[in-house]
Image (tube, rainbow, N blue to C red):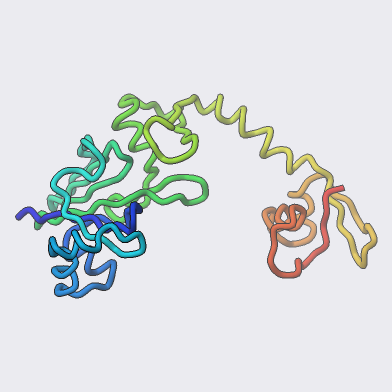
Length: 222
């Protein structure tokens, strides 16, 4: 059975898209609250207020015509779709629909397919940008996650651009200080981490002053 899809806005900002049950669960609304918010006269009277949540029933896609492509279907009939607006849709066995936006983790956009995190930008690029995306190709998102912001380059080309930046930290000389006096120097942050019994990232964070508490060791670029 098909369920109606709604969108909740705060001013012009989209807060959530989903069915009645999904919206009530996410916003902690009761069914009575949902029906009150969906009532036409309430929307007409208060929907334009920028600080008030406005519930709108979606007759079509919220932003123009959105192309969808089936990317996975489970044995139990759960279907996952990639959408050209860079969102993902899940249709459960009972017909309920859930639309989600990818999130960014460690610089990579991810989404969940069958409860497993997947590379969202790569899935979207293969669906709408280059269907024959190869294993030796990397998808780079320049700015906001949109199809027009995706670039596909070879891994070697991508590595050539990234490697100099990554190696810059390792080639800087690290100085270990005690009571303000230089005690020892290291040719790289990895060497310093191994000798001082801490992680490579900790050394980098201290040298780049990216810490909230007093650091355990006094290390600096010299």
